[in-house]
Amino acid sequence: MAETFSVSQYNSILNSESFLQVYQLWSQYLEHLRHENRQLSAVWMSYIHLVGEVLLGVTLASRKCNWLLHLCAVLHMIPWCFAYKKFNYARYLPVYYAQMANLPVEHLMYTGILRTGQIEPSRSPPVIPRAFDCATCPGRGGI
Image (cartoon, rainbow, N blue to C red; front, top):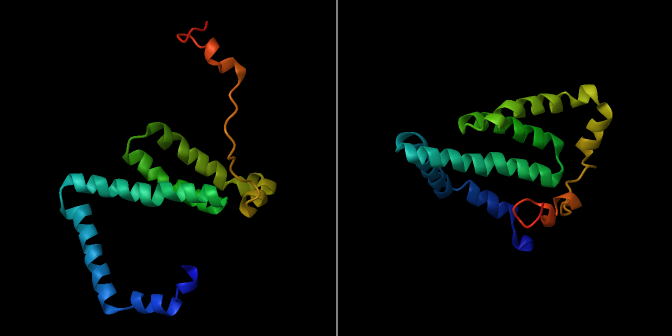
Protein backbone atom coordinates (compact mmCIF):
# COMPACT_ATOMS: atom_id res chain seq x y z
CA MET A 1 0.00 0.00 0.00
CA ALA A 2 2.87 2.36 0.78
CA GLU A 3 4.26 1.83 -2.71
CA THR A 4 1.05 3.05 -4.33
CA PHE A 5 0.83 6.21 -2.21
CA SER A 6 1.38 9.33 -4.29
CA VAL A 7 2.11 12.62 -2.51
CA SER A 8 1.09 14.67 -5.53
CA GLN A 9 -2.25 12.85 -5.83
CA TYR A 10 -2.79 13.28 -2.08
CA ASN A 11 -2.11 17.03 -2.29
CA SER A 12 -4.38 17.43 -5.31
CA ILE A 13 -7.26 15.72 -3.49
CA LEU A 14 -6.57 17.70 -0.33
CA ASN A 15 -6.70 20.99 -2.22
CA SER A 16 -9.66 20.10 -4.43
CA GLU A 17 -12.84 22.17 -4.24
CA SER A 18 -15.07 19.20 -3.39
CA PHE A 19 -12.85 18.14 -0.48
CA LEU A 20 -12.80 21.66 0.91
CA GLN A 21 -16.62 21.83 0.71
CA VAL A 22 -17.01 18.49 2.50
CA TYR A 23 -14.50 19.55 5.16
CA GLN A 24 -16.34 22.83 5.70
CA LEU A 25 -19.70 21.02 6.04
CA TRP A 26 -18.16 18.51 8.45
CA SER A 27 -16.72 21.33 10.59
CA GLN A 28 -20.10 23.07 10.67
CA TYR A 29 -21.78 19.82 11.71
CA LEU A 30 -19.30 19.29 14.55
CA GLU A 31 -19.84 22.86 15.75
CA HIS A 32 -23.59 22.25 15.65
CA LEU A 33 -23.18 19.13 17.79
CA ARG A 34 -20.92 20.91 20.27
CA HIS A 35 -22.80 24.17 20.73
CA GLU A 36 -26.20 24.35 19.06
CA ASN A 37 -27.64 20.90 19.62
CA ARG A 38 -28.84 19.46 22.91
CA GLN A 39 -26.67 19.04 25.98
CA LEU A 40 -26.27 15.31 25.53
CA SER A 41 -24.51 15.70 22.20
CA ALA A 42 -22.24 18.36 23.72
CA VAL A 43 -21.27 15.94 26.49
CA TRP A 44 -20.54 13.17 24.00
CA MET A 45 -18.52 15.50 21.79
CA SER A 46 -16.43 16.60 24.77
CA TYR A 47 -15.89 12.94 25.69
CA ILE A 48 -14.84 12.12 22.12
CA HIS A 49 -12.41 15.04 22.22
CA LEU A 50 -11.04 13.84 25.56
CA VAL A 51 -10.47 10.28 24.40
CA GLY A 52 -9.49 11.05 20.82
CA GLU A 53 -6.97 13.77 21.47
CA VAL A 54 -5.96 13.91 25.11
CA LEU A 55 -5.86 10.30 26.31
CA LEU A 56 -4.55 8.91 23.05
CA GLY A 57 -1.85 11.59 23.21
CA VAL A 58 -0.71 10.19 26.56
CA THR A 59 -0.68 6.68 25.12
CA LEU A 60 1.23 7.79 22.03
CA ALA A 61 3.80 9.62 24.16
CA SER A 62 4.33 6.49 26.27
CA ARG A 63 4.73 4.23 23.27
CA LYS A 64 7.12 6.56 21.48
CA CYS A 65 9.05 7.36 24.68
CA ASN A 66 8.66 11.04 23.82
CA TRP A 67 9.08 13.04 27.02
CA LEU A 68 8.02 16.43 25.63
CA LEU A 69 4.88 14.92 24.09
CA HIS A 70 4.12 13.31 27.46
CA LEU A 71 4.37 16.67 29.22
CA CYS A 72 2.17 18.29 26.60
CA ALA A 73 -0.45 15.54 26.94
CA VAL A 74 -0.44 15.82 30.74
CA LEU A 75 -0.88 19.59 30.49
CA HIS A 76 -3.89 19.12 28.18
CA MET A 77 -5.38 16.53 30.54
CA ILE A 78 -5.47 18.78 33.63
CA PRO A 79 -8.60 20.83 32.68
CA TRP A 80 -10.48 17.62 31.85
CA CYS A 81 -9.79 16.27 35.33
CA PHE A 82 -11.56 19.30 36.77
CA ALA A 83 -14.38 19.11 34.23
CA TYR A 84 -15.14 15.45 34.94
CA LYS A 85 -14.71 15.90 38.71
CA LYS A 86 -11.73 13.60 39.08
CA PHE A 87 -10.54 15.36 42.19
CA ASN A 88 -7.49 13.26 42.99
CA TYR A 89 -6.15 13.70 39.46
CA ALA A 90 -7.11 17.36 39.48
CA ARG A 91 -5.24 17.84 42.74
CA TYR A 92 -2.04 15.93 41.99
CA LEU A 93 -1.62 16.18 38.21
CA PRO A 94 -0.64 19.89 38.32
CA VAL A 95 1.93 19.06 41.00
CA TYR A 96 3.29 16.22 38.85
CA TYR A 97 3.44 18.51 35.83
CA ALA A 98 5.25 21.23 37.80
CA GLN A 99 7.82 18.73 39.10
CA MET A 100 8.41 17.24 35.66
CA ALA A 101 8.60 20.67 34.01
CA ASN A 102 11.29 21.63 36.56
CA LEU A 103 13.24 18.45 35.88
CA PRO A 104 15.74 20.20 33.56
CA VAL A 105 16.58 22.63 36.38
CA GLU A 106 16.77 20.14 39.23
CA HIS A 107 18.12 16.97 37.55
CA LEU A 108 19.81 17.77 34.27
CA MET A 109 21.22 14.25 33.85
CA TYR A 110 17.77 12.61 33.87
CA THR A 111 16.38 15.17 31.45
CA GLY A 112 18.83 14.10 28.76
CA ILE A 113 17.96 10.45 29.29
CA LEU A 114 14.22 11.14 29.03
CA ARG A 115 14.48 13.37 25.95
CA THR A 116 16.55 10.85 24.01
CA GLY A 117 14.05 8.08 24.78
CA GLN A 118 16.49 5.79 26.59
CA ILE A 119 13.82 4.87 29.13
CA GLU A 120 11.23 2.57 27.61
CA PRO A 121 7.93 1.51 29.15
CA SER A 122 7.94 -1.93 30.71
CA ARG A 123 6.02 -4.53 28.73
CA SER A 124 6.60 -7.42 31.15
CA PRO A 125 3.75 -8.71 33.32
CA PRO A 126 3.78 -7.50 36.92
CA VAL A 127 5.39 -9.70 39.53
CA ILE A 128 2.93 -10.60 42.29
CA PRO A 129 4.63 -11.12 45.65
CA ARG A 130 3.99 -14.39 47.46
CA ALA A 131 2.37 -12.45 50.30
CA PHE A 132 -0.61 -11.78 48.04
CA ASP A 133 -1.19 -15.37 47.05
CA CYS A 134 -4.85 -16.43 47.12
CA ALA A 135 -4.14 -18.91 49.90
CA THR A 136 -3.39 -16.02 52.25
CA CYS A 137 -6.31 -13.78 51.18
CA PRO A 138 -9.20 -13.44 53.64
CA GLY A 139 -12.47 -14.85 52.36
CA ARG A 140 -10.83 -17.20 49.85
CA GLY A 141 -9.97 -20.03 52.14
CA GLY A 142 -6.94 -18.23 53.53
CA ILE A 143 -6.24 -16.51 56.84
